Structure formats: structure tokens, C-alpha cells
Image (cartoon, rainbow, N blue to C red):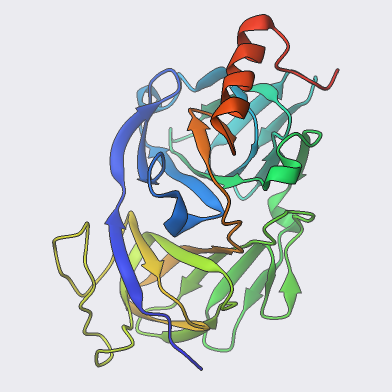
Length: 300
């Protein structure tokens, strides 16, 4: 076994998107090679409706997939193909924008006003950039949940994990997306395919991820390229190097994180907002299509 070292720790930064939704962005619009095949990761949560109720009005996507995972509240969605739906707590939507789609997403808090969800953008390889758009709406009850002997809980959204396979299928990068909860004080080893880029996003509790060159619990990784620390907590993104497993030690309150990995495409990226293609010419064509009203290639 070869342990994946911690290459970097990133603290998600406050930003505003849509019509005025306050969220925290862990990565996006930057280093595409490190996270390949993933492009962007946002954590949107709040206890005040004013932080999120303006939502994400109608906007386009082409050449990517968006993955929305809701923990609290609801997200209403609709698109240019006539699809409509409502994501509740525990539900997932995997949208393949492909050749182009217009959609909107409008969050609503739970009875206490709380809203919490994540959105991950995954790239599409060049031969699937203009594929037919599709949705995979997954109810929380249909997501496999595994409890290990030590109490570790894993919800498998996509990919194979501990002998179970998530319900999201047919994704080009064959990604793994798992919601992992490790109990207080527990140490857990988790295997990851060596061919994949991988990261963990911590959103509750705290803990440490063992570095291959340091004694357990003593970390020497860079945090935002300058600060060194041992423990990672809420809104921290841990980027792993090469290897076939990670080790996490949960703190006194336990730790909960999303573990995401995918096969890199190693293709050029041409990026303009919610449109991601391979060349500048393809990007220019997409923008021209938007202006000419020919962006949507599939009819309702």
C-alpha cells in the first residue's frame, strides 16, 4: 500500500453567485490540472433566507456536468427542455449539460430557515462535449448507506465503495463521490484508485490526514500556500497526491467530509463562466450561439 500525501489544504473562500447567493468556493476558475476532471466546488449554506433566497435564475451550461447534493432545505429546478423538480434533504441531481441547456435553481430553507448544499462541476471529455443533455435525479432513500464495524458511515452517490455502487451511472470520468462520517477518535484507512485525482472536503467536525513522511497526527502540508497546521475542520479542502489510500484520524467531535475522485482527462480547457470547451474556437461558437438564440440543440 502507498499512502497518498497531502499536497495542499485550501480554505473555501466567501463569494457571491447567482442573483446574490452567499456561498464558499473551495476551487474553481483556476487550476484545472490539479482537480481534473473536476472544475469547481461550492458549499452553499446559511440560516438566513436573505443569504440564499435570490437563487440562481436562468443561466446556460455547455460542455460540463453539475452535481448538486442537498443536506438541508430544498432546491427547485427547471430547464429549457421542460424538466422540473424539487431536491430535498439527502437528494442528489447529476445534470449533464452536454450540447447546451438553460436552467434555474431556487433554494428554500427548512422550517427553521436553514439551507445547506454543495455543487460540484465535472468536465466532459472532448467527444462528449456536445452530447444530449440529461438528468439523473436521485432521492436520498435510494443512495446506499454503509455502516462499518467501527461506526464509520458512508453514503455512496456514485462509484464503487466498500462493495456498494452508487445510483448515479454512465459518467465519463467514472468518478467516486462519497459522503463519509468517521466517529470521534477513530482512525480510518480508505482506498482510492491510483489513477484518479482525489480530494476531501470537510464540512463538519475536524481531524487530521496522515502525511506519508510524518508521524501520525503531525502534518507538514501547506495551507493556502503559506500556513502550516495539523488539524483540518469546517470548509477545508484537502488535496491528495499520488497513492492508493488515505488515512484520516477523527477529532473529538468526529469528522464528516465528501471524498471525491475521478480519472483525469488531460485535455485542454477553454472556459467562460458556465461554458467549458476544449478550444477557444468552440468557446467563441458557444457564445455566438447564445447571442443568436441557437444555443439549445435539443428541443423540448
